[in-house]
Length: 295
Image 1: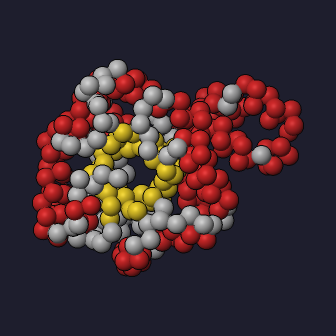
Image 2: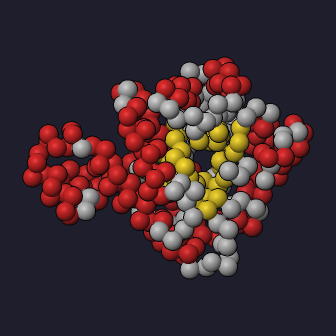
C-alpha cells in the first residue's frame, strides 16, 4: 500500500460533524467532472489510489477514468462495500422485495424466494458472494488490489460473533478477484484479535485514528498499545476527527505513531490536497519512518 490514500466522503456530502459542510459539498460536487478533476489533482500530487464506496455515482466516475488511460496510467481503486445508504434508500423507495430484485440477479432471486426463509438462513454466504459480484461490476476494467468490507458490516458481524462471514469475505475476495481483503472498523483491537482467531493474520485494517479518540472504540490508549504489536497493516482514517483537529496537529500525531502503513484523507480542493500531502511528508521526515513506508 502507498503511504497516502485519497478518499471520497467529501464527494457525496458526508461529514460526521457539520451538516452545513455536507450540504455545501453536495452542491460543489453535483457534477461528475468536478469529482474527477479533484481526483486528478490528488493523482498529480503522487496519490495513485482512490479508496471509495460503491455509491451509484461511481459508475460514471470509473467510466471517465477508464476512458482516460494515459492520464490515469497507474491508478488504483480500493472499493469499499456495501454502500449502506444505497440499500437503505432502495428499501425506502421500493420496499424490501423491490430492493432485493434491484440488486440480486434474477435467477438467484427466484431460487431464493422459491425455497423461502430457510434457504436464506442456510445460504447467506452464497448470497454475500452475489452481492459482492454486483458491487464489483462498477469496477470492471480497473485495478482493485484491495477490496474492503465497510465498517457498518464489519462491526455488526463482530458484535454478533459472526466471524465465519468475515472469513468468507476474505476467502471470496482473494479467490474470485485475486485481491486482498480489507476491513474497515471502529474497533481495531477487537477486529484484529477476532481475525487472528479464524486464521487471518496480518490483515489490512482501515480504522479511525486521531488524537481525541473520535470513533475509536476502546479509547486511544488501547489503540496505541495495539499498534505496538505490529500484527496488522493499518490504514489510519478520520485523522482530522471530522474537522475537529487542525491538519498540522492531526498529522503530527498520526505520523509519530508506530506501524501505520497508510493515511487516508479526503479533501475538496487542490489547496487542501497539497497541504495535507506536504504535512505528511514533513512529519514523516521528522519522525524518520522507514523507506518502505514512504512512497
